[in-house]
Image 1 (cartoon, rainbow over the protein chains, first blue to last red):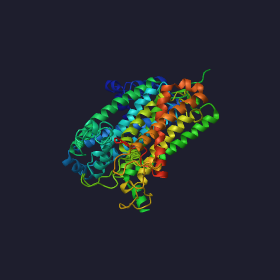
Image 2: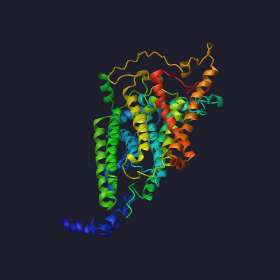
Image 3: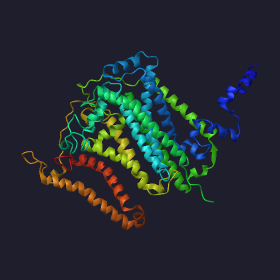
Image 4: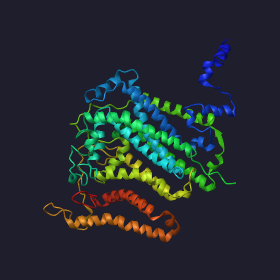
Length: 258
Length: 297
């Protein structure tokens, strides 16, 4: 009875139009599984055996991307409960941690995944260096990778301010105080004062929207964190992955000449 | 001991523990693989260059890794709450104020350099230097497999920069820095009233040339001498390295080219300048090498 229903569903036009083919264990069908799937077709149909060996890749690039997805999803959920205004931000955090169902869990996942992503991105870079994978033809993809590392730091750093607690405001104060010392563009940097830089018109003022980490800085960091930087990162990720494919997939030793 | 437990118990410091174990663990693991490959002559990776189908062989690994990571993050998030301290208060500065952990290496550099170097110039050069790596490492060997023998210099320099100057300084910033950014052993109680005698002198003062005149104005002789030290560091060592390279490895110098050499040696000397300044501080209490009216080095 059940088997009959299953067969009927599987042979229906609706099912076939969605899934197109079953899990038949043939070479052709395995290839179709990858090519016909919008998510999997990021992959080639076949890869060299050492490329699936996690002892070689450590899996850190893929894990970084997974964490980016986890962060996007948990981040969107957090945005439902959070208002980036100084008078609400901290109260919203309290509400989120204590009253929203699973609110604390979502926030914890967002924070710990963010920390983890910084680590996995650094490890990915380290692995790529140790296997010499930045060598031709992959030189420029390494450069894109460095930009992605920088974007990861910036994403993490802008998110650090949003809880609007003592930890957030002072960690970001320490970080952004560096901008005061920018040569030519900061009011305490070399040749800054000579060029007319003051606390209320230098590069740090541009970053914070004020002379100290205040409500305008909170809004700026929020917009950067939730919209601008994720968009830029997604674009660079697309280029990064695309180039991995175009450069012949995961790096490996040149096949021996026969 | 109480303080060490407090640092270790801070949930925001847990990532640093993961970082230390994974980074150094992976390095040892990679070097073991490199040694195996080097002894064999042909990398083991070459044995596995035959093709397998992505479905199921790669998708399977990705799926298991994804489940494992998500389970790990979930358990971590259930076990430890992300910190939420008192509301932001611009009038109440905590001591110490620490940057996020991944920037603690930069904050640690502030001990040795002024903010315009430690906070702006060196981070910019780190990014530029990283981007330049594929273009200044012209060694075609070691592409796509673990090796040490074929890339001794590249791996040594990168490992020094990453494992020592980046990761180790993060470790120091977390475990060894307390109120006033003073040095504390991890098991030592943080005493906010710890008095550290400021005995730092400028390098020129070690040669008996005071940086400032008795009336407080800058001593131009000291300023010029400091400039000679800093500019001389580059102006002497860069050409010296080039001539040595041309003499000892003429073929390599030819292939490497002068432009690439200038960029590489500048980045390298700047990187080495950090440990040099650290050692100068520890041994001779040197504050500045070069004092000018506009900036200090």
